[in-house]
Image 1 (cartoon, helix red, strand yellow):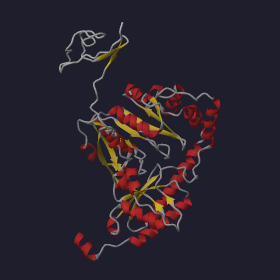
Image 2: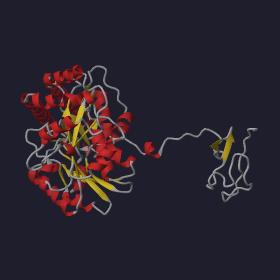
Image 3: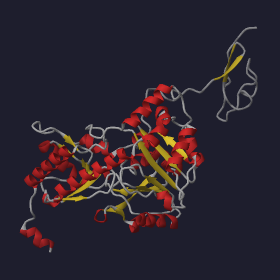
Image 4: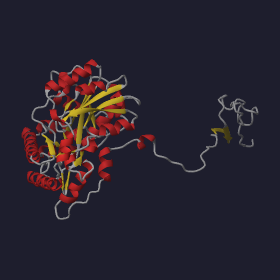
Length: 452
């Protein structure tokens, strides 16, 4: 039998114009209107020709809508340090940069033991090893907020934990409430997912407590969650139990779930986890920090199944860290944490004390984490348009880089990271003083009279 190829020609209604050509039945393959070819008695679908006549590959809308404010601002700054002064970077939230805060030996040994065991070289479940989840649940559980292994989901860094938490709670068109100033990644992730961001105010005069009245005014029917960052990046604030209860009261009244970013909870002497005082749905994020590695646990009262499914998109939690986790949590001496906290507290006090006496600057003393925010009285520095220009020139003249708070949507402030060695912090504060003394201008008599 002769092998031939035929194509059924269809009209605009998907109906064949000829019946029963060789190798094709009279219904255009089961009557579904799809064209087919037969080659050696095998039937293959024949797709209609694409209208695309030339290459036209474009980035997705999600990628175009993704913006990290810190990167967009810093990458656009003109940063040329003074060649006569060594650079001091007070901008990077990485405690390993200067080598003065090394990882504890017990942590390093736990990592080495996990590698040498050869037990953690393959794939782990997307939510993490069961044993690792049990270890974290036992370590962080408390009578007020008991945890089981099924309540814990392990992710690769807090960034992935935030991504999963926002994605499981929100749909495109929803909105979330985030602090201002606040960690820029919240907005980066939300906007890329088609989620609106509403900024609620923090109050510097109250050590960055939440403006609860403003917060509540932003809630509507499409508000999917409230993000509370405590201890705070960039502010270094730590909320009292009473303030946390006030926040929970607002959320309870408006039936609003909370995403509690508590990644810096171990960088403060006294810290109250939000879930301990709450019967509300709370997605809590914490970290076991290994400097080069991060390990996040996520405890949750609802949405478990959605989180499990989302975790299967990218199997990202490091298996070596999971293998070392039990030793890290149980064997790392408390003195390691206490020494780190004492150092951060001392450096914060030095920085606050030095900058408090500089005309034109208003530092806010932190209570935890590793950050300190400093207000700039811009009217006294008329040479500079804003905090971005102020910090640019500080680099150019003094080789000290502080992050402009415009990156946190809070202009006329800058953030200092207090993890640098003490002697370097003293030198940096001295240079900031010299810079401000050079550019500070008292308000003129005429301007003062106009303000009265």
